Image 1 (cartoon, rainbow, N blue to C red):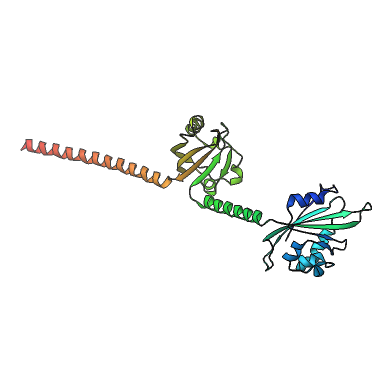
Image 2 (tube, rainbow, N blue to C red):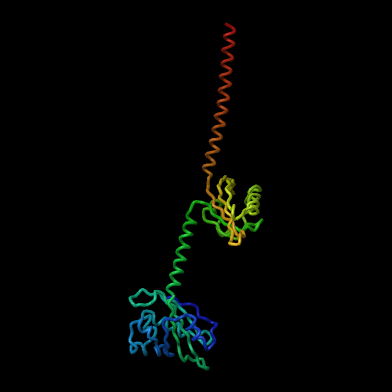
Length: 297
């Protein structure tokens, strides 16, 4: 059971009726100032498997939350003429035919002297809302686990040239650039790029269309420690339903090892060509000597 915030804006005497109609309460009952049941509706009796004789005069909190009765009563007694409403949620797992999640609203009536005259309790079935909320949280966690755990570098930024404000960057992107996520979000990364890369981004922002939103290229990055990094980027422009560019998302793949292997291969080929040239020169020199010896003979 989670106790919610007390509503401080309720001062209209007609508020109980608005609660009834606006929250579509499933159970309703009235309580005495001593928090015993004064009136109760049939749906409440059916849900908690009670006879009316069992409910009338019983302590309300002990009927609903026997293990937390004292805590609930203390919270209810904290209501004042200025703060007359409290709400809290209840998660049920018992055998009773009740909603999986309930939201309870307790409203207190006071006389002109500030003394409680009556409490009203309303219960609303919020199971569907909570299930939607839980599913949304689970999907968000799944999405983040995929995004954060993948090896690709992922970032998203606004097309607000020349700033290009970063709105998201995953851990791989942060590690590749040697910075923390909190230092990136809301800031610009343009000062870390070469003149060529900045010109490429500007051109992409100005020319990307919903029909042609993608660009592929390889970027060379030099880290603060002098280490070289090559990233193959898949850059996509994101447009809304009206065709307005609202963000740019880049997915990068670290191809440093591949690039280094290519450079090493180029270097080895160049070395091999130098050796071949030297060998050719030696062979030509040998042939020349052979011809000289032949001529002498």
